[in-house]
Image 1 (tube, rainbow, N blue to C red):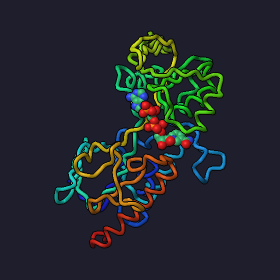
Image 2: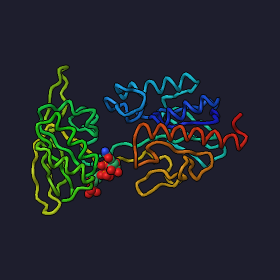
Image 3: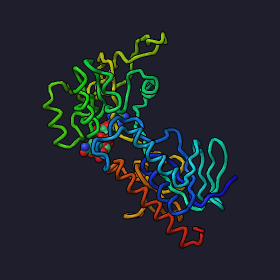
Length: 322
Ligand code: NDP
């Protein structure tokens, strides 16, 4: 078991920025990259709103740069997933899929993941290229000239539906109620779009697939029909589509800390306003794991910087920085 002054969990913009600041402060941070190295930006295409790149930059390239920048100052990044955190042990301890590590300060930058409907096959088909996705910017391109559906009634669903009309011939927006949650401006924009049709009071109960042969000869299941149920009348309906985008919100990755750190109703970690401090001394949270409001790469990076500075101050105040 090795001991570290500071451990950072997560390698999105928040985790890498915390690592850059902590390593430049000579704290020799250890970073666990987790199940999705580079975080959510690795499944996006072009990032046009991260300052410093006037022509934009591809999401994976941006994350590669952040990683290299952290490593340049001595950050050690391990391809391990944290399975257990014990914040009440002395010293505090993390268990990963490869070993055990103790630490003085901890920065939690585990981010958030897209929510799935929880019906048979939606998440599975998203992983196997079966025509289900939670990211229009990543996958919209594959649906040129095709009929597709988007599930959800919030800003994300309407933004994704509108964006997808650049590619798809028709987009059906499926919402479980008869009123949208999205902002008025977003609603009006979507309603003006002739390619978008609204299916109100409807939920997807099942996804019917058909077998499709890939150029390699491999056969994979692809979305072909959505089995819809009317939430008001209970009536069933079939909707033939070639793609399904699920846009029903995000889930913060906080299960490691259940019962150890306070969370809001949606499971986001609570931090002291204006800081990254959790109520447990020496434990800090940054990025999407504590922010359901902004969820931007640049705000995540900003809070990663704050977490490293907060951690460094806490270590110094407790005589643990040297
Ligand atoms: P939201 O939580 O706002 O909306 C989620 C939507 O999905 C709701 O309409 C909800 O229905 C529906 N839903 C939830 N669970 C299910 C389910 N199991 N089956 C079917 N439908 C379901 O999430 P968003 O990702 O849309 O937005 C998150 C935040 O990000 C918001 O604050 C939003 O304003 C912001 N945002 C802002 C943007 C912008 O300003 N450009 C763009 C995108 C997001 P119901 O309404 O019935 O609860």
